Image 1 (tube, rainbow, N blue to C red):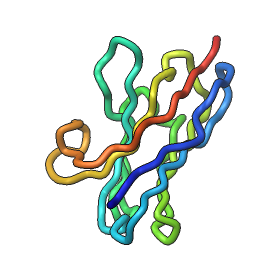
Image 2 (image 1 turned 135 degrees about the vertical axis):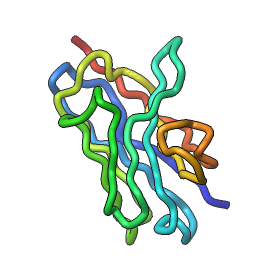
Image 3 (image 1 turned 90 degrees about the vertical axis):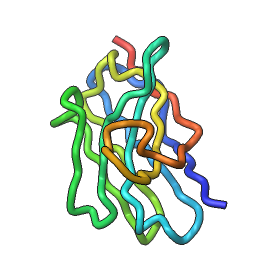
Image 4 (image 1 turned 180 degrees about the horizontal axis):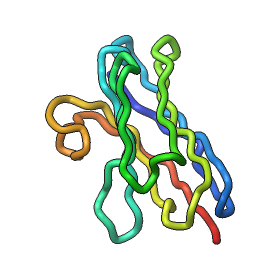
Length: 123
């Protein structure tokens, strides 16, 4: 059964960096587009970044453009989110997800989710 497992979260000071990883089991990782979402306490889960299966296309929510970089290594069945210049408002649980169909910025377009990894940015 295919699973997604996030890692790399933690506590960091404002201005610092973290690199999140999303490891996928199974052999079909490379055929799927993937995304990162985050959910802060009391807020809805929101889109952060998207990458297509061939790594030819990426997109980001405006609030992270220029600071975050999404990437993937299909040979390793792993997706990454490099987060630089972190701000306290980036504090959230970060989830990776497998895109199924439809618009890539909405949660209902994803059919498989990881358990999440906590990112906390102190001021």
